[in-house]
Image 1 (tube, rainbow, N blue to C red):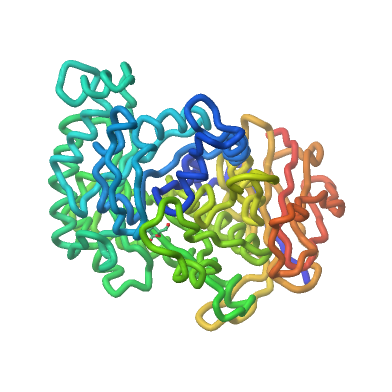
Image 2 (cartoon, rainbow, N blue to C red):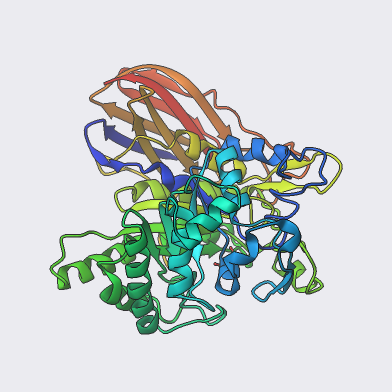
Length: 500
Ligand code: AHR
């Protein structure tokens, strides 16, 4: 099989917002407790944060982390998580039927973000709370001093404001599982008023309104439209959420989900722009794909969990090789939409549907899932500008139930700071593929690195850490052409040193 890609350094889709490679940590299962925070762990630092996890998170270079939920936030009182730890209340978390000790809260999260080099994306509770709590939280976090909430922050040990820029205004408010679920009209009105109050406290904040929790939801489409009709001028981003499963054990269908993901983004862009046109607005709403991943392996196990315990083993999917291929393909799709998707959050980061897993004790204390590898490579090297294919790609396709799926997904990015073109490629075919590419407006000097994730059984998982990236030895440069022989079912990255 053969596939081609042609790019030109001057032909750009868009600058890639570094926040495209963000992630998400929720008070859910062992994401926080026993994940990022475990004071009795042998690697715990002076704040109770696991240093082994900090090191793993740093490898992913996540620039932005959404917190504290997720469904959790819609029943959360942020004031429970501030002040002396011995005075913080223990509460029921109704979203995940767990017990929340509040030993980790706002200050701990901000401090942890600083240690891993990320900025926060703070979600506010629009389920059981609302305008007042949201504006108080902005004041607590971002106002310098001299008011009740800002001085309370200082009393609690943070003299300087946190200056949180990105805020999620509620979570999945279209879902009837959500505490305080609303109709699109109710939510749109509430966002309008909440955003107004938040921006009155700090006009520099950027706000993300909830889009649909998945595009199969009954209200999908009309939800986005109504929310934006009510709050277009007040918010900066609209969110998208989507998880994929392979319950049917159908590899071709599963790997074809990137087409579904691609269509979903294009549809939300179209809806947003239709509202823009109707409003005669000059403002463009960008997208925050702030929950995306594969999620299904753990669902049976979750049903067997005892409710009302602390840090239960929930949503602990063990990802296999085919999951890594789809995650790579979804990441490529995000890059193809870099002009409109400015924020992305792989959901989630540690233990809960996550690339990083921890053991409470023993070795290895931390292990990397299969999906860790493609995500690490895009987050480290999917930077700069995404390049538009300059010629129609010749890529063979196959017919899935609802889509025609290209066997090869690929994208090239140009990182002028590093003088590199980086190409990411997924081969979804069960046979080797000759990939050939031309790069115009550049002199190609040498291959800096070429790796593949290949050769594994599609259901192999990585608890024993035997699955790794290896060198892709079949890459050659000839003038402005690159050729590579791609292994069947493989994730590949090629970094080329170039002179523009
Ligand atoms: O990430 C797990 C859950 O998925 C989140 O809490 C919720 O927002 C979504 O439904």
